[in-house]
Length: 399
Image (cartoon, rainbow, N blue to C red; front, side, top):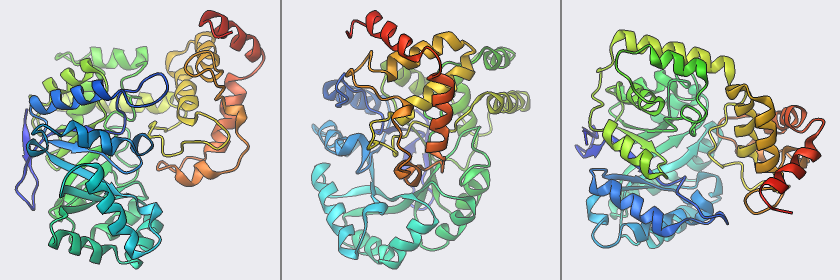
């Protein structure tokens, strides 16, 4: 495992962090606790020393799970990160209420890296007016938190003013080779680093979109490289190539992926990609932009939908329709996965949307979800949809 220093603290952090937003789940959607704890501890045993969770992950169950995973001496081996749910703050006292509850849920007396969560410009203005900087100062002074930071999902124009508004220790941004000009982007990465902030990276694989159902055209680009790497390794190595990056979070929920990420994190030095390799990544980025229809990362912030739509899964299948080029196959998979043939047997398809707009307000990517769901309905629920659902139910024995 390679390590990089947090600039203001000198902490030696593993370049790979364990993100606990996408832990393994059972058929009913609950966390597979035994497997998740085994995975987290395996990663720590192999050098990972940064573990990240948050109040809303897994419907509020991620923090308690992480607390149990870090028992038996594991808490002392890691720097623990969690986040203040900024959108739920209505008054100054709420901040202490949430932090104290998180300390209890995580079974610890302090949070090493505490973030004001999911900021956009308006959310920052609200919590700043409610006294969040004084809260952070107090929590640092009394030892409940060690380092203060924020995670960001807003426009690039708001990023700099948030960086400049407080003496932050670190920040967390979405960054991958498709997001150089999105949200904070490359400009934000450089600005934060210039101010002495450590930078934690989230969504390095764009919710798996850079590794799942990789199109033939993209694989053909990767195959041109003299050094052969998996799509995940290309994406991670590209981020770690930036010396301004401190830690890259991966929502690892598969043992094979954990082992692969650990292997790459033992080799990914900054400025180690050649110019030829960087040009290959640029070509892959351009091709992906031609193919992807929706910039959804599967973060689940839009969920649950009051009408029962599984929004991330709808968009995953919609993107797959164009990534794979297999229209018949993807229409069948959409019918099976969204029509209730697999899983809990409850229909979750896009046409259940009633255009309430609640999801639009929650989306960190600022997607116009109701409008995009209409496109999903048009292209994946057209003629023959009911017949495909019936066929899928028969195939998966859900009649």
